[in-house]
Length: 406
Image 1 (cartoon, rainbow, N blue to C red):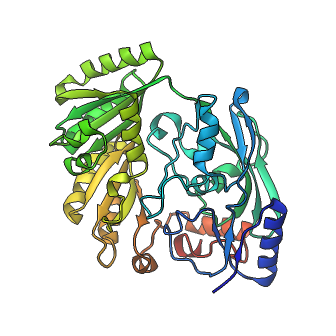
Image 2: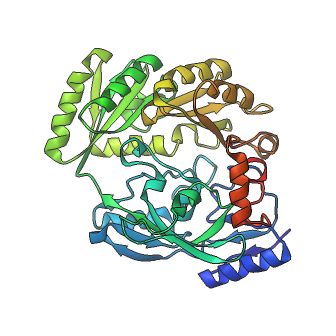
């Protein structure tokens, strides 16, 4: 069994990484560990735990800026933001329950490093669009920083885009600065009942192309809808298509009314008000329909062009006999399948090859993750390898977690 390092300051973290570089001892970088099961199994027993770097260092509501250490829990950040009626608009997911952990354990560093965007991505953008700057220790043991603490920042190379979604393989962040935005006064969700995947795709497309500023568009087949904690959704006997509208009271009322008229041909409809709306979108964000100790299936996250989503989802459901739902207006498919030998990896990737998309095996046993490529091999794999070598030439940080050691 290897050592576990838990630095309490950025200086201690840098010293730890510098020691690992000199000794050529690879490190598994974790926060609270809720996403350790995503990616290839760790190639090292030595752990670098950043959970003690957990302070909110600066919060300036009037500037829409928050700076915190990577181990700061999202629930603590959200509690600070709500006092000023602000939020992280990219709607960070809490995948703890999906991965077999308690809820509300996820950290800011984890959501940035894993690039986990929620349902509002279609309107507010992805995580990387709200990631303003950071300080970090590279795999060379060197402290560096990029970006800044202002919303409009163009200084130097935009390494934030590179770090976001790097899964801790390039550097260990010690400070993170993100943009925050005002919370909406009101949230309502239009529900349309009985749509097929194809009809749901058409309804979501029309809603998103309308002038009514839809901030969430998802489709739940009957199986997924039945598992919802929202009674109006769970009692549906057919599929449910959900369209979220947010803003001020008068604006939301008007836009919901007009959207219902726009989509009247798609079937019977209802509305969810703020509390139930928030509950539903939190379920979809956190993939709760496939969470729980009784559900041991493998779970895929499949990103495709929204126009292709319903067709590809139908193909995946037929080929795998799995359960799924659509988010991001059809651009995101969450798919749960029996694990078997390879979690249907070949079928999933052959289906996605019919589109310009990619798939990630989010949940599976260690045995499956040892022989299946969890992340898609990108066309730019050679470039990714050179970037890895530039930041971490001795492959000290999270070795082997991404594609073929990249």
